[in-house]
Image 1 (cartoon, rainbow, N blue to C red):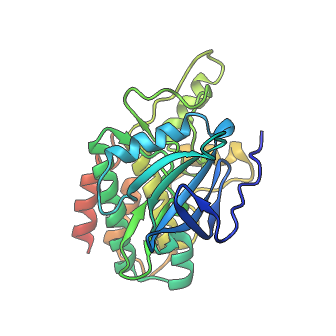
Image 2 (image 1 turned 45 degrees about the horizontal axis):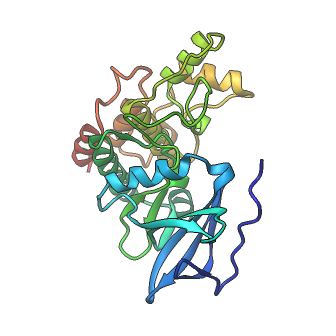
Length: 285
């Protein structure tokens, strides 16, 4: 079921916010730049019949998190007031670019890449400390602020925390396949035919995804590839990626090492925590 067009024209009034322009659109909603009392905000409209529990999930998570590198929650409500069809999540407006666009346009140095990854690792440290998993760490969910350069982790719509109800009945939780960890694919292969089997993601899944992001930033390509889904999964499970410093001679070996440590095949061999990633990146700097 596709949501109806959630297109708000510039000047539209929503719960006291005046819409300026659309910032982006996904499968479950649309994000707009809007103003209230002259201040900019990001308004996320989610079509209620399609978004379901994702609304409550994202609001609940953002209420737990207060960190300079995590997008801040400003408010939420239902719209239109009399016959609500949309949930409105009002968030801090990050005046900047998605990480992939930033990297393409800036061609950043290894030092700048490391500083941005440090911001994301610090965001994940705070997120995991609150018992929350992001579960969709990728370039599109990291914003780099235009004015001073820090990064913020955004879009916790498929995040998870202890006690939260499942969003789907699938064996794997929602997420982007290119960023799934080997342990998730191993579970999928082993239990795909077992009724009711459910893979439980952990902090190590977020760290693997961070490694995929870092590899792309350093090399301009993904660490794993395949002609089809089965080939890709096999590559994730069995292949060792070419070290980033061998793909791109401008990559320092210390940073290449951090990246490969994040892409170890088992959680036990991976960098053990987001806080440890922070330490490793600080040492690399």
